[in-house]
Image 1 (cartoon, protein in one colour):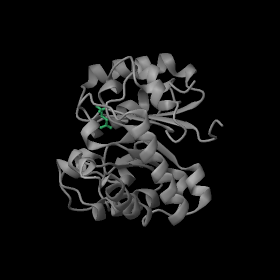
Image 2 (image 1 turned 120 degrees about the vertical axis):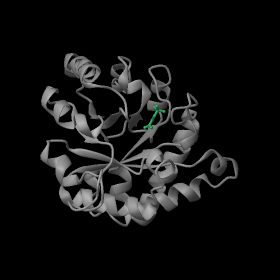
Image 3 (image 1 turned 60 degrees about the vertical axis):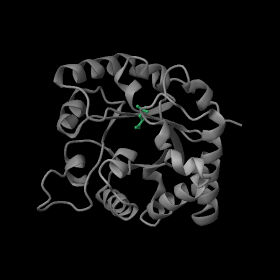
Image 4 (image 1 turned 90 degrees about the vertical axis):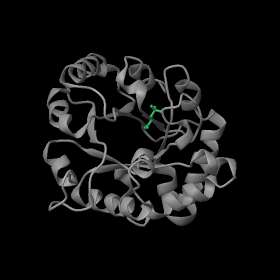
Amino acid sequence: MASSRKFFVGGNWKMNGNSESIAEIVKNLNKAEKDFTRTEVVVAPPAIYLKQVVQDLNGKVAVSAQNCYKVSKGAFTGEISAEMIKDVGAKWVILGHSERRHVFGEKDELIGEKVGHSLSAGIGVIACVGELLSERENGTTNDVVCRQIKVISENVADWSKVVIAYEPVWAIGTGKTATPEQAQEVHQMIRGFFKENVSSEVALSVRIIYGGSVNAKNCCELAAKPDVDGFLVGGASLKPEFISIINSRN
Ligand code: PGA
């Protein structure tokens, strides 16, 4: 049975691009957007280009920041707030990405606080979870993912503004994708967590997207899995093949 959850594809550009290359990506998205009827599409440029991208996109593709801090303003050099993201017209923020967790040392608690504050400021959250290779190998994938989801869920009142991105750390930027079966197994487990700990309604409606070396070649097989509701795409979101990934469920 086809799910009633709207397919969701996010493009995480990370720390890539410049004014010129970003203008080119936006031009391609604008050209293609008539096809995006069944998929919610969001792109996340580096913070300094948020406003440019919000202004230049035609309107069907929403814009996300890649991170923000847990309060609205103050002496936090180098940070941006959810209020600022909203102010420039972006609608989403990615929080808890594995690079934030593992390169910048962000802990579950901080990520939870960021999730809570961003939602209360009125922007949607793409909340990322995922295990390290060592954790997969020692059989603790479910424990790690549940621990991360639990902290996130303690900070959420309205689930309609939250998308969960399952991104196994060993699959990000490595060219090593989780198999559709591996992705489905964890997504189903996450949905089960919601059923048990939040509600059946949330378990049915929350979108759980997959990230980690998604490309035009592997997206259709992953998209066919019942609990895979879309993708968070890194490297391939900078390339024309992003359009094929957006349309992988059509
Ligand atoms: P990747 O990145 O597609 O380049 O593996 C995914 C992500 O980090 O969201």
